[in-house]
Image (cartoon, rainbow, N blue to C red):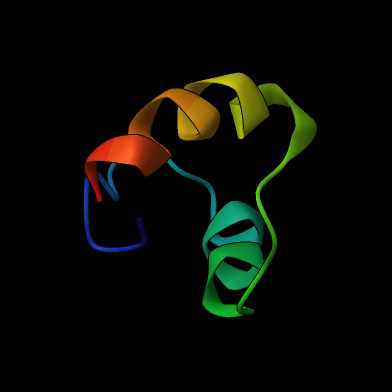
Length: 38
């Protein structure tokens, strides 16, 4: 995720992206759709 479009993202947001994080609740549905294809 991190190296995608950095210009729009604040440094605070980028710092959070550095942590290995779980799927956020907003992305959960999208990820569930993608998982069968991975």
